[in-house]
Length: 134
Image (cartoon, rainbow, N blue to C red):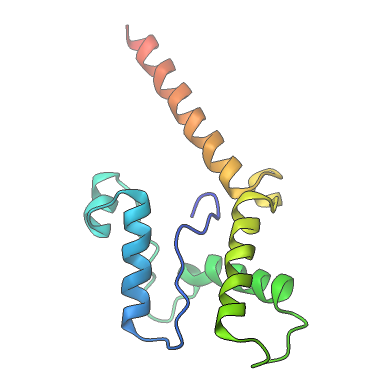
């Protein structure tokens, strides 16, 4: 969530459990995670699953959905596209969103750029910490 990158997504004709499980599996596969909760604990991260009735855990994805609808589907009449057309437009938007769309929240960088900068900064910080120890 730190760089707003969409790691995985699925588009199904239903909103049932397989949609969630398949999307999670794809995200874990792309991130190299064997299991979500174990990885969260291993890296000392905090899961963003809020308790029932608390909307803050959904704020990031709700904001993304707003952007998707307003930037890609705003002038599209409901039920006017075939599923393949929706998938194509969604794939195109995801590439744009992650690779080309700058975000003020990320210092006017794209999610991919910000993630790469953070990874590089982490390596630099780590190497500085190692040098200061020795």
